[in-house]
Image (tube, rainbow, N blue to C red; front, side, top):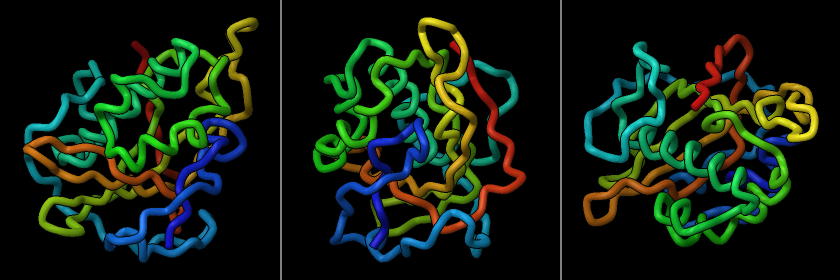
Amino acid sequence: MRRAIGAALLLVSVLGAAACSSSSPAAQRSQLPPSVAPTTTVTTPTSSTPPPSPSSTAKPLSAFESDPVVKAVRAWADQAAKTVNSGHYTDKALQALMTPALAKTMKNILGGVVGQHFPGPLPFTPISTKQLANNQRELRGCLQTNGFGLDPKTGKPAHKRVVSAFYGDAVRSGGIWKVSALDHGSFSCTGVRIPEVKW
């Protein structure tokens, strides 16, 4: 079973202990530390029509930007930063981008960073995607868990930069892709470039 991303989401480790999903293929992923070497094979992104990427850059952030799970997690990362900037760890706009089960964990995931200011979406780089079930896709990626959120008093990063491996799952229901899991990754992010997109 994977460990869900927890209370230190952009602090010491965005990936702390929280509830795990249990009845999906994703629940069988291991809880190995992020330093374990990757065993992932890169898959070809598929096309879909989930929420648009928040990136306004001309060059795609990765080769996976057209994959529905990447689009869903990008939309979540964009709204999560806006929600935190408003002084909250959840709101209706953020809840609309994820499943009810994941929405219940937002205090654990984002509560610890309320008070910081994010100048853009939470930065991450997908390194592979795959289909878990007919309407479920998995993203393996590297997330900047520290060093992007700013101390509003100084305008400087609130913490030293930390990058963590993570899994992000999305499910399609009623034609809409929603983020369904954010969990610790069991692979290395050494050498992975993570662009910081600003609004």
